[in-house]
Amino acid sequence: MLSAESAWRVLRAEHARIRELMGALDDALRADDWHRPGRALDALRAGLRRLQAFDDVTHRPKGVVLLRTLRKRSPQSDELLDALARDRDQCDALLSTARRQLEELAQGAGGAPDEVRSLLGRHRRLMLHHMEREETLLHSHAAQLLTPAEWSMVVSSMSAVVGAAAQRERRRPG
Image (cartoon, rainbow, N blue to C red):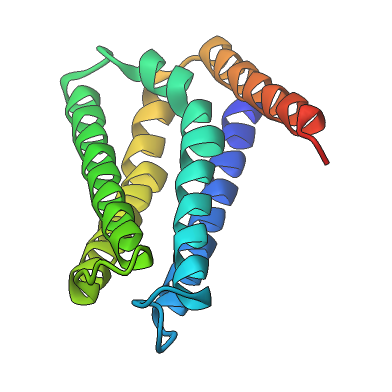
């Protein structure tokens, strides 16, 4: 099951990157003046964009075939997939609201720094819980339910995502 090991190695490495990006957000929130227009607020907003872009463009697309292949294999795996999808939706909503409020702060419209801090804290806790369930429960379900041929298909799809990302990066103006 070399394919399965390879897939999980990639996904765990990406989870580590997500943890790093969330840590950078925590660091940005420690700045004294992040809640006023200026450098610290710009750094926080940029960090939030990096986290969301990494998740949306790099991480999530790699799991599409895995999740689709697991669907309808067992009631338990379907329940887990539904719960993970709800987590993702909630994480997206929290980040969207935080980004909107940070935009208001950047425009000097006052805003609620404590609310932003709360939103990002809730996002962090939910995302950490989500990744832990992926690394344990999802991993267990996938190991039990997927065949070697399906794992090969999953890894091939992950490679295609990596290849597409590399092409986009090469086309990006320097």
